[in-house]
Image 1 (tube, rainbow, N blue to C red):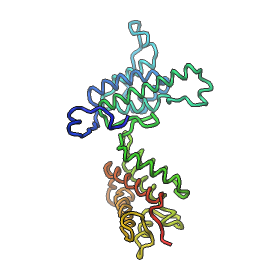
Image 2 (cartoon, one colour):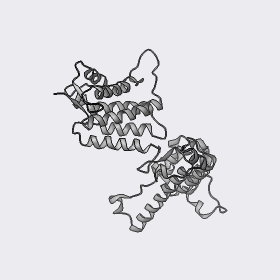
Image 3 (cartoon, helix red, strand yellow):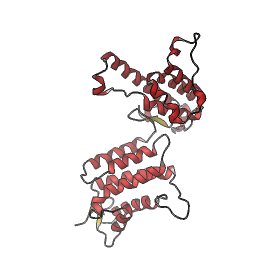
Image 4 (cartoon, rainbow, N blue to C red):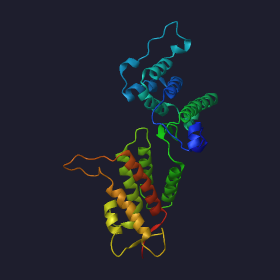
Length: 313
């Protein structure tokens, strides 16, 4: 379901302003606790007991031993563990707990190797069960208009992204696939997007990988013989007079296109505050700065990979 198809409250429809929430509301918290309790039953016992260690939870989450008054289902330790995790952790930990469960839930498709050793009936049951868990969770997130969604691989929570931004990333990756000398540009660009859109964004990593993506995409065009080329050295090469590069952007017969590319590269380069150490404390890039940097890098990578920037013969 696309963002535009999600239900919105009357007030949001009237103002035409889709609002996404960062925090878990009490109503969503109740639904997430129920989801955690149910999803945990389909996670292996040994994996399930790794969750509190991964999240650094205190020891009082440990479930009580069952007794004869408990429902029969509670004789399964997995059920008691998932129930205890669901109803002991505070609301602020719920998204981390959901994220951990998504990582441990078996994939939707057992895969050809696993399928060889699993009865067909069980494969179908596993697939339906896991698909329902993720489908139900996504419905809760959508209904609460939470800023987070399930990742495409179903293994984590990620930040919702604008469809236009996703299309720009896909266009950049497609262009890189047609560029033999692109190096690791696609890997760095994907890593930058993953870092900035994670449940807990890593802004410095996203910014650093955004720069590396541009360096990898531009290297063979701007400084192919410089094995130590960086975005800084490439900028110096691009700024030489008379200009040796063109960019098929803007009005023909002018330098407007290459000047635009240089300006974007310069902004990306100068904006990285954590690149070097010094006498003063390092200032890390903010999430907002890194988000813009990733967008800039996506555009620049496309320019180089699609042949927009060329060296004059």
